[in-house]
Structure formats: C-alpha cells, structure tokens
Image (cartoon, rainbow, N blue to C red):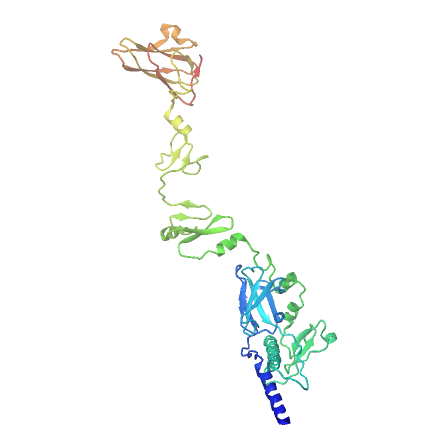
Length: 436
C-alpha cells in the first residue's frame, strides 16, 4: 500500500512540473535598437525580450548637440507586446512625434534583483527556474553592452588600469606612463616618457577660445582674414577660362563672360594691345560709333585757335575759333516756339549781321517787305524800305535778304502769310531784341 502511495505522489509531482508553460529561450544578444526620427513616425519595434515593461528605457537624442532626454512610460510612450509576454519583443509608441535630426533608442535595462524564492521542499516549477535563468542571461547581456562602450586594454596585457585617488587626480592631466599604465601629471611635463611638447602644453592650458586663437596664431582679422560675405561670394565661384568675377548684389557674385580676343587686346603700360592701361591710359585706333561728352573737350588734339594757323588735319577747334575765323555766325530762331521772330515787330540788333525772311504769299500782288532804321519804328517811313518782293501768282514763295548794322532796327512785313524770319550775326552770337 505504501508503495502505491509513493508512486501516486511521484506521478503527481511530475505532472505539476510539466503542465506549466515554459518561458521562451533567450537566443539573441541584441539589447537595444536605434531609429532616426522623421517628424511623423511614432511606432518603433524591438525584437529583444523584456521580463516587465519597466525594463525598457527610451532615449531621445539630438544629433547636432548630443543632448539626450529619457522618456517616461505612459506619459511619453506606451508599450505593446508581440505575444502578450514580451518574450519576442514588441512596439514602443510615442505620444508625440519627434523631428528629423533626432534619434530614438530603445534599450533593455533589466533590474539587478532576484525575486524568485526556491523552497527546500515543495514543487519546483520549471517556468520559474527558466525565468530566473533568463533574467541572469539578460543581466549578462546588459553588462556586455556597457563593456562594449568602455575603454579596454587588449586581452594579452595584464597592466593595472586603476586610477589614483581623487585628491591625487584633482587638476591634473590623465596620461600613460612608459609601461602604458594610467597616471596623472601637472601641466609641466618634464619626463621624457611623455610626447606632449611645450607648445602643446601652452595650448592645453588655454582658458578660453580667444586665448587659444592667440596661442595658435588664428586671431580673426590679425592672423587670418575675418569672415566677409563678399569674399565668401567670390570663394563660391569655380574659376574657368575667359571669365571675370562680377558682383551681382550684396554677398552674391557670378562670372562675366569675355572672349580670348578681348583679353589678348588688354595689356599693361608697356604692352602693344588695343587697350593700353598705365599712368596715361588710352585707346589705340579705336572704332567709336557714338560718343557723349558732358563737360568739355581738352588736350593736345583740341585747339582754341582763331587763326587756324596750325592747319592740322586731325585736330578740332572751339566754337569761338570757328566764329572768329569765318567772320560771322548764324542765329536761327525757333519758327514756332516762343523764340520765333515775328512780322510787324521791330528788332534792335546787338551785332552786325543779315536779316532773312521767307513767306508763301496768298494772292498775286501780295508783298514781302524789309525795313531798316535807327528808330524803333522802321516801317513808319517808306524811305527805310530796303527790299520788297511782290507775288506774281497765287501761293508764290518769296524771300528777302539784307544787311543790318549793330544798334539799328529792322522790321519784316507781309500783306499775307506769316514769314519765317532768321538772323545771321557777325561775331558774337546774339539775338536781336524784340521792341514790341
């Protein structure tokens, strides 16, 4: 009877041991995964196992600065499992989206605790035993992940890598001795075992950026050219043949296309090109289709010579020289504007000259007459009449021309039409003065 009781108890224990589900094996050594954020994705998968959701750590890192932020479960993200127990991983879903330029790292950090109690007598559950073994494996992987980020010496070396105490290390440099062991030294390196030069000692003890730049001769505006947007614009150009740099705006530049012929024509003061530049720049035999001079001509090729005695074939003279040499100048009035000379008006001359009048008479027998006198009413006396022209036919165009001395008065009359009256002055160009 006792034998059957022992057999029944053994069968019961075996059944209790084998009916409990067995936890999954830890077959992967992966303990973390990192994703690049894009401003829209919020779900991030992981394949490594977790014993509990609290074993997950989620870190956001800003790539440009290296700054990190650890997120809080529920507040910043939620977890969902792949098979209800996280033995095959799951998904982290963040509450907020994280912009491009950031990364998100999911890392397993198993608590360093042992919470399973095994009794001296009683039922030994395989699942509990395997879960404890799994946790130990995860802790080993966690330690290995940290070691992978540590400074390690090769396996073949046995050097003591312990550091000196905090008092000895304070305000000192970490260096390696001739045996490769870590030690400390002040800024004054005197041992030949160290390869840091006196120059680098000065660099290492600089307390600010400005002091460092002065030490290495990199002071902006003194040792190196200060940043300038115009120079930066020129530096952005790619040089090429027959190109001239050209500023197109503030801080922008491009190239002006030229030709090999133009560049070949340009020479210095001793050159022979078409364009010669130096202390007296000039153009040799250019073809100029038009020129505008806003001030005055000057130079050896421009003459103020009243007698024209040089008789040059390649020089020009002033207006005054032309008037003096020719002996008279023409003053042509505006036939239609306010400057027009009018019939039946007496004009006082200021120089010797000639009066000219032209008109289209309407009918045969119409006349065009000219008068000169020393009073301001030349036409009042017929004895002052110097010229008269009578139309022989309808619409005849007739004209008269007569001399007038300076200080005399002249007048033009016509029975029909409005004569065009012009004045040619001898010497200075002065218009006769209207007396009416």
